[in-house]
Length: 231
Figure 1 (cartoon, helix red, strand yellow):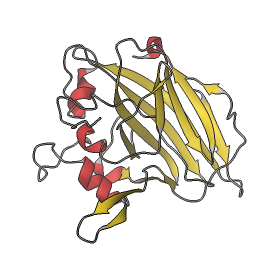
Figure 2: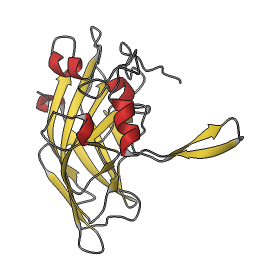
Figure 3: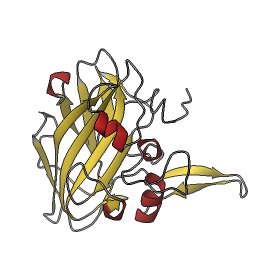
Figure 4: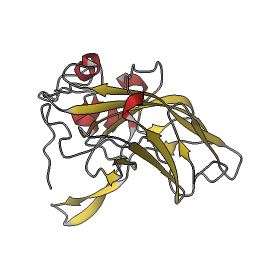
């Protein structure tokens, strides 16, 4: 199923993504991989050198035509009547000694050379792609454009009432203040130290459980958030 992303139908055929993944082999166990974490609970990892990585979802806000309209406006998200979206904020501390992958290195078809080329994302690509107006690429925006964010695939997963939400979702990694992403402090990889991950995606009317699966080193950490926890 194809889905054209626009300001009006942003992620109509997509769901909310979970919010960060570590490149294969980078981090290992010392956390509850078989457990479920809730809102505000911290999942922590260590690598072979004793470096640490922690992730906690600290905010879940529902966005509709009448609720949290400030977020919809910030991210240029056009909410139609009856549609539900969720904004998730994660706080991350990366002490691994290096950057951690956030965006999936996909391959795209090179028509001219008739081969597949890797699509890499660096800071410049992300900042240029995210911080522009949907209708005019020459116009820079103050906050990242949700419709542009979904074009950079993250290595993350989410489940709505147990059903896998296929499709695209938007994630931005930034330092500074929570809920205040800015182009100069936006990164293609999770940097060293403290940072934030913000995600916006569409959820269903009958949502009972939003399960966020964080995949790392072939293992899984599950975060479960319910609608009664949404602000």
